[in-house]
Image 1 (cartoon, rainbow, N blue to C red):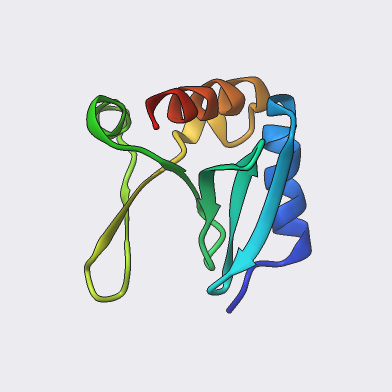
Image 2: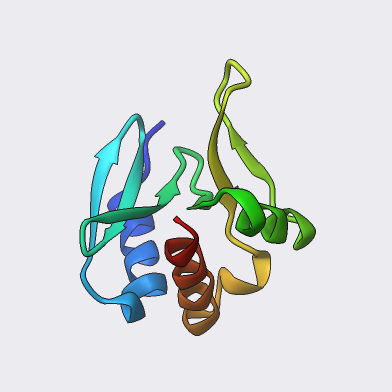
Length: 103
């Protein structure tokens, strides 16, 4: 199953405060970019993940976020957006900026 245009529009609305936002559909989901830099993905089941590594990944884990894993168990370095940010564009953009800074 692939993500709908409405789900993609929801992510655009959530992160519109970042500016320079674009997306690309891929593998049933979508990847999101700000000024050409990938920072998030939308999985085929509609979950939003932020790109994270190192200390920022540890911060997301401490927030109770879950790591994205492929069907074969491989990880791609993406973690779910904290639940509190799913309905709060300001908070979502704050987390996204932190993800971008950590890249």
